[in-house]
Length: 558
Ligand code: B12
Ligand code: SF4
Image (cartoon, protein in one colour):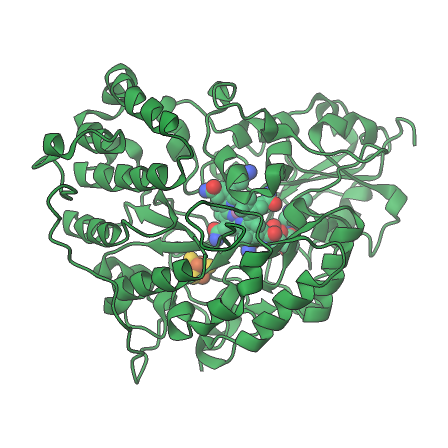
């Protein structure tokens, strides 16, 4: 090929492609750790990726593989290359007409991301933002820009427009949403050198438009469902048309992953329990079991990983977790608290988002369906008990600062958090971010600098739990405890004021007698617990019908 370059080059940043230790949560850290101090955190692995002998990427995020597969319907394989930033000079040359870039979270401004980088100062950016910049500003793209079009797509592409960087970064087109039905026309135009629209808004494609994968995706990611239908107002995928991918297609995609060297498969979904579900979100246990067993049976598959799920289906039909035992047997994760003979546990990302019944009713009541909003705390507690009993230790997100959150709402979240103090889980507090294309897009985002003392207490109580549950050595706890006063007096107080002081002390394991009266939760003499795990959560006889924005596009509730 020499230096003539390929007609079409597709690229993703290394930090969004890396599958270090097959650990999804480690990659999530890259969205939060500050680039400037990356060496302190020993995150050299953030850019650890594997390159094929011809210089192409061994694995990239699944969304980019879908684009590659789509383009291969019209272009020859020799006309397309998929690579990481460092290999761009091998493929971008005088013949290149289009460069397509995947953006998962390019500026780190979605939820749970810049929050943590901000702890080191206002202008510190997360690692994946720095890595994306390294990709989009690569000198070879600038050198050949006069004859090529730069097209950016992916779930985080909106961030470039939001930050007004489209022109500075010379991006011709931002593709917003699922691109199957627009990508061929767009790239063909680019190849012909025709002008492109600045922005393309996509509609959910029919199932037939989603092509089988042709290459390996990061973590061996393979979609099993797309879309959701529960309609949470802060969520950008709430409006994606809901569909289950047919089992044969899933298995075909799994086989492609293995052929390209993957031994782990990540089953990608917005909600695991939507897979082949029945009417009214009824869980289809036999279909899920068949899916897991068939994927695990593909020769070469050693590990199974999962992305997202919701609590309500687990409480409606707890047998689903017991029936999916294979998910634990084939998990890559281990923890001393697991009762599995090999100490394995399975992970599922679950959005709890709030303990306030009022906020739950206002913004996300479909998440708890068929339970009523006032049953949400019980659903969370019961769901967690069922999960933990079967060695599923979920990673849960919780949103601080939803629009209109009052001190009473925060107290309700703290009460629910307190009731979960002995759970086996990880809880990630995030700040509300008004995502584009959501019903809350015009609401103000929450800011770390404005957190109340109750919100700080919530934030650091979460991290105290995580530290206690995941700390592998007493030395680590000791280091954190020592670091707390240093951080507070040298940086924290200056950046965020005194509201964080006592919550931070709880995080640092200061004695409870010092904190009594200063914080809402009292860990020493038994906080007056508002919630306990219920024996059962009754399913309402006449479940309410959540208001969902555009029912036609979504999974049917009837
Ligand atoms: C798997 C996954 C992960 C995995 C693996 C990610 C990876 N690097 O491969 C893990 C767990 C590591 C992860 C991490 C994070 N994730 Co994530 N992740 C997902 C998930 C569940 C599936 C992604 C996927 O494969 N989808 C299927 C493919 C086909 O869809 P797609 O990627 O959107 O691709 C389509 C279009 O975007 C477009 N497209 C994609 N690429 C390109 C390129 C071009 C050139 C074009 C034209 C079009 C195009 O066409 C594709 C086909 O329709 C999605 C939710 C979802 N269901 O999409 C969240 C999601 C993308 N993640 C999200 C977030 C917030 C994160 C984190 C920032 C979380 C955090 N706070 O720590 C981190 C960031 C990681 C990092 N390094 O920066 C958000 C993005 C929100 C937003 N709109 O900004 C989502 C939407 C989840 C959500 N419910 O909100 N994630
Ligand atoms: S349950 Fe809510 S937050 Fe989760 S994917 Fe569905 S709409 Fe989004």
